[in-house]
Length: 186
Image (cartoon, rainbow, N blue to C red):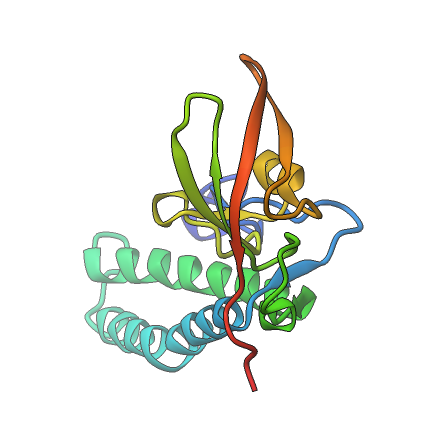
């Protein structure tokens, strides 16, 4: 059978990205305004810049003749599929997005989406996290998804409260030291 009619992988047409957390069934894709802007900027970069450049390379490589051993053509087609998959993924995520401005809670001491929370565990170690959308989480920068166990435990608690986080090592008491929100986006 000709290689042109065989899928490279089983998941070639999947729109889910490897490593991307799925949106829980029935849940909305909450995003901060900054997160929405970042995803939209990535989508526009792919559509307006990267995809046209790869299309040019593939067109040029195809005009060189034998495509079966043409590395530029083979790599370009593979990269084009990756870009198209990412475009579909980002488009779906933006279609499902519900932008929530955490600034509406500015000045509040109760924890909701978008809060930056400093808490201390039972060993006295302090941690600061910001509760963000599924597509915005970055644990190295202290950004946790609103569906994470720590965020679910902290949500609706107030500054000064003590909450119990259930971990694989057993329950852990967390003292909420401070809660803050950014200024409201106009």
